[in-house]
Image (cartoon, rainbow, N blue to C red):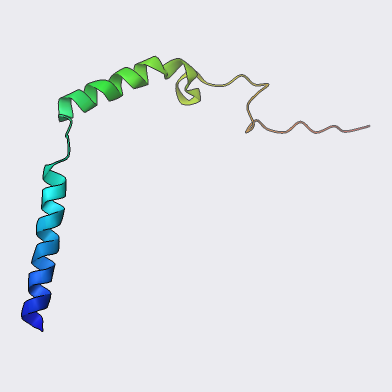
Length: 68
């Protein structure tokens, strides 16, 4: 029983390796360049870089109305 299960496990590993070997891969430097370009193109929309206006900031301190 253990021989047939080990053969089945090895076949499964070989099948997975064949699947991974057939994938098209991107070079790391190309992925990094694409990521950098994306970040630079979208930097003007990033509130962590540009900040938010006080009117649209959902985290601003709430104003309290008090009557004297």
